[in-house]
Length: 255
Image (cartoon, rainbow, N blue to C red; front, top):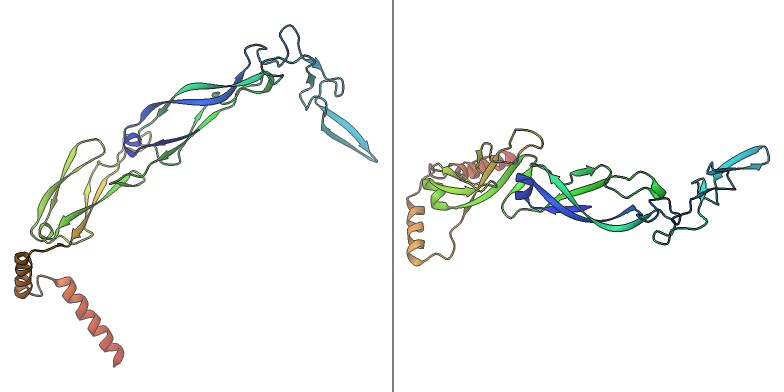
């Protein structure tokens, strides 16, 4: 059974009700496959062993009995409800406990909740395959979560604060120091996913993306141009250093 769930549900865990079409023991013949009042008979071909032997030259080959299909019994008067199978298909409602911290691709086994065995045989198991839907804001890596947050150029330059909502519904404040560069990560300890069947919790990493201003007014453009004119190498050490290193590198190659 394939079940899809949200990242929030994987974070907190849940109890889900699922409806599963499955084979169950026929209530008319109680799984024997024979019409009530009758019973299966020992196969006359294999004498109840389910196997027959055939001689071929110096060899003796054993194979499944063609009369009873290896069951060792035959049904002369099959049940009218299950037609001799001993089981019928019905839809059942099952309660499935999804633990907190479940990961995408996890398989849960429900012992004895699979299809009923043929003609009274033991029931099999039911396997639940879980998939976690992609989240709009968070990406998951094990127990850790990652979130890319865009901030304005002025906030990155002057510093500031903003709040992010974590999966538990609470808000956590992130302080951006003056001069923060694009790609800078801030770790919120213990704000990630719970570790499956453990008391440990992962971390939430906030990755800064700096947004370049768009659709500038005339005044805004004038202010930025004025800022550019009075800027020094100390204001942009990375870009200044990069182009200086690039020039030196290619000058060295041409010598």
